[in-house]
Length: 404
Image (tube, rainbow, N blue to C red; front, side, top):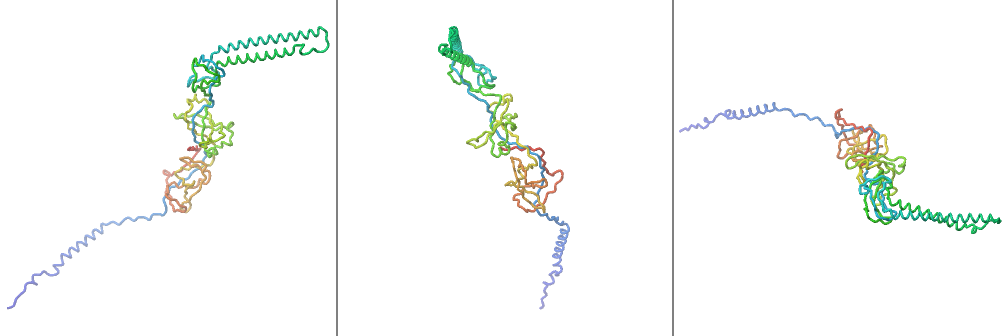
C-alpha cells in the first residue's frame, strides 16, 4: 500500500522566508542614508602660525632727576650741659627753666645768691682805693725827691732809690692787682645770673629753688632750636651717585625733603659729609640741617623719611622692573620674528623701575609678555595692537626714587 507525505507541501517557499530579512535590510539602509544626509561636515581648523605670541612696546628717553631715599631722627645742632662757674644757693628760677621750656638768647635762667659776691666786690673796691692811695703817696715822694735834688743845685742824675722809684713801681703793681681783683669780683657777681647762651629749649633740669650748687655744678641740659640736624645713612654707591665727596656742600648744599610720621613735609639742606664711617654698620653719614624745626612743628628725636635731590641726567630710559631679565638684560623683538637679548647698563634702580643710560634705543621693540624660558633666536609672532590697546610708555621729566 502506497503512503503519501505532506511534509514538503506544508513549508512556505524560500522567497517568502527571505522577504522579512530583505525588508529589515532596506529599512536599515534607508536610515543610514537619512542620517548621513543630516550629518554636517566638521569645521576645518586653520593652520596655526608658528611662533610664541608676544606683545611689544617702545620707550622714549627723557630727563631724569635722581633722588635717594634715606631716614634719620632730628637732633639739636647745639646741645650742652648748663654748668655754674661759681658756687652758691639757687635763689630764683626762670619759669621757662623746666623740661620743654623755651627761652631766648641772653635770658636769665637761674639766679644764685649774690650776697657774698657783692661783699667781694665791695672789698675789691676798697683794696683798689687803698692801692691808688699808696701809689699817689709814693708818686708824691718821688716828685719831692726830684725837686729837692734840683733845689740844692746838685749835678748829675739822682739814683732810683733816692727818687723812690722801686716803691713807686711796687705801688703801681699793687694798683693793677687791685684792679684785677675788682674785675674778677664783678664778674663773679655777674655769674650769679646764669644766662642762656643761645635761643633754645630745656631738655632736663637738675636743680631747684634753695639748692646749693658747687662750682661747675650741672643745672640742666639745654639745646638750641634755631637749627636741627639729621644724620642720613648712605651707601658708597649712593654717595657716588650724589657726588658728595667731590661737591662743596658749604657753597652748594643738596636739597632734602623730609616727611614726618604725620605726613607733613619740611625742607632741609645737606651741609656736610662726616669724615668717618660708622664702626658698626660701615655706612657713610651725610648731615642735613633744618632751619627753625620747632616753628615747623618738628620736635627733637622725630623720625623723618628723607628724599635727597641729586643730579639731573639726559636720555634716560625708565624700564618697569617686570620687563627686566636677570643680570640687567631685556628681551626685544628682532628681525625675522625672533627673540634677541640685550645687555643694558643700569646706573640706578628702584622697586618699580630700572634706569638705563646705555644699551637701549627708542626703536627697540621691548617684549612685555612674560616668557618662561626666553632663548636667543626663539620664533615669535607679534600680537596685533590697535590704538585702544597699544602700550607705549613715555617718561617726561622723571624723578627716580631710590629704595633704601
